[in-house]
Length: 83
Image 1 (cartoon, rainbow, N blue to C red):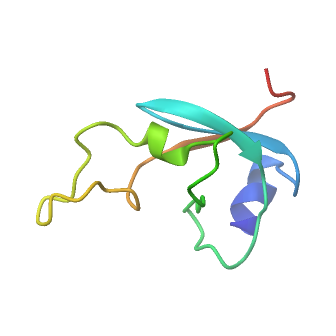
Image 2 (image 1 turned 135 degrees about the vertical axis):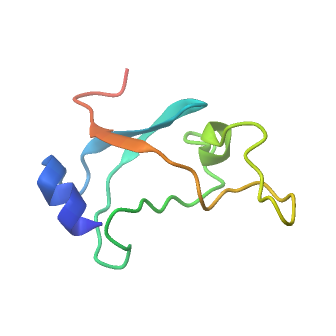
């Protein structure tokens, strides 16, 4: 969300790290008001930043058993360079 990004000092195009208990990925930030405050939206299907790789194993919906791709807690931080 653009307000969350502003609070963290993150600007459009800055490199950020999105991390979960399963790992982390680094991508360019694209803050927008279209994403609800307090949430992160990440498209899947990028070879260079496989968001599915940071979904913890066994993180499944309790009713359907489907992986909980839309409900993973994460941390976001600005990174100086992609190392």
